[in-house]
Image 1 (cartoon, rainbow, N blue to C red):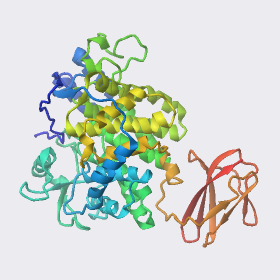
Image 2 (tube, one colour; image 1 turned 60 degrees about the horizontal axis):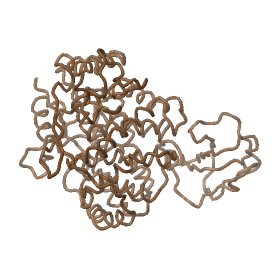
Image 3 (cartoon, rainbow, N blue to C red; image 1 turned 180 degrees about the vertical axis):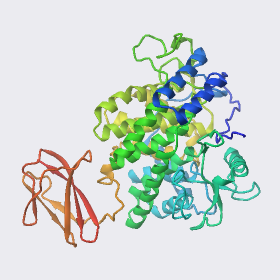
Image 4 (cartoon, helix red, strand yellow; image 1 turned 180 degrees about the horizontal axis):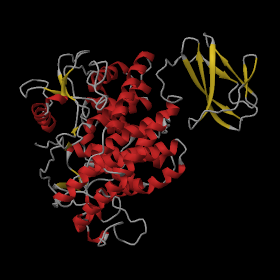
Length: 559
């Protein structure tokens, strides 16, 4: 049985003045170590998986954090870009391409989907408004999802995944690259996992819908890579679109995508599992559903956290190594804590994917009020971004074009959601992000557009707002009334609030804290007024459901 891996081709082209990183072997330890990790990720407990990684770490020894492939770095320019410069490039070179996009082929999630995500970020800053073009991109991904709206009776194990189209390499819609060849191999070797869709714009086309198979001991998990990007874009579409029917459509897609993030098993390649962690973190942030929280914790503890090189007792040695391995004995990029341990994920772009997934996991726990879990995760997350910044500032920016996107996204995500939101000084993250901007890769349209949208967020000081506050409440498949004429007054108030402008008959009212916890105390009404004198001071959400099942959700302040 051939194993096939949905990985990126890595550019090793030389650039003048570039510093080349020399690769190491034994990416996951010995072959026995690697096989053990594969098995424990699929079948073992959290402890089994942790032990398997620990054995691999000890085998790698002083090769910990050393990458499997060479890459080049160029000393960069730390000058902070101006908001005007970034906005000009966005408006001239990125936005027009997104606005003019039309669907002709099913595309994998790392392309136009990423550009749409950047456009939703730009929309938050007032630099994008064409929701119709974003609808086309989101619907293209929706129509590639292995779900009941595209195929009857999808199997539960893989339901919700965004499939890869299966086409001959002469077809103009052939995805190309390693994805195209891997799908061809999968569909010829395990054709049961390549199915014909029966509905929507890609009806009649075949899609690969699985990355693992127990019977053949195939545990690659590569579909998670693009699945993560697409899931996050669907969440943004569900929040950012204004048409209630579209919001419902994309929310349902995000729900199915999150179902797949739960059912898909951990794999040895941390960045694949991290894309599932990223999805679960944002869905937990948005919904507060403990189903996502529990799976998020499980995948963090079993896969991502054990893979990070840490020095929590500050003794200068990598935690858990036997015999002990000093950080000073490692490759220069791994001499500060926070690097991924294995040869694959220690490459800067994969390091970055793991870092931003952990950042969003931390953010989800913080936003949802789980301060204890957030405090456990934060040192790992900060170490990962510090390590990444240290490499850029001390040794130069990577020259791999696709990797530039990933490194930059991780840095900007941390700046926006941690440094700016928590008012913490992480100038190293900022200087590294400015260095990446000054590589010039963002001057023209590409998959990098997602980062240009994030630069706009950071440089405009657009405040980060938790997902469930942007949408006002947790995920709901009921219709949410977007009518802005519905108001609560007085607001703030110390004694009562009154809902004005609603046309239906209110049948059910609920109150929630900003962490999404429903208040159990009885609600007291006086005519059409809700008495709130006994509430503690703070910010609350009120959710009203009318006799047609429609909902309005509003925020109010109790003084």
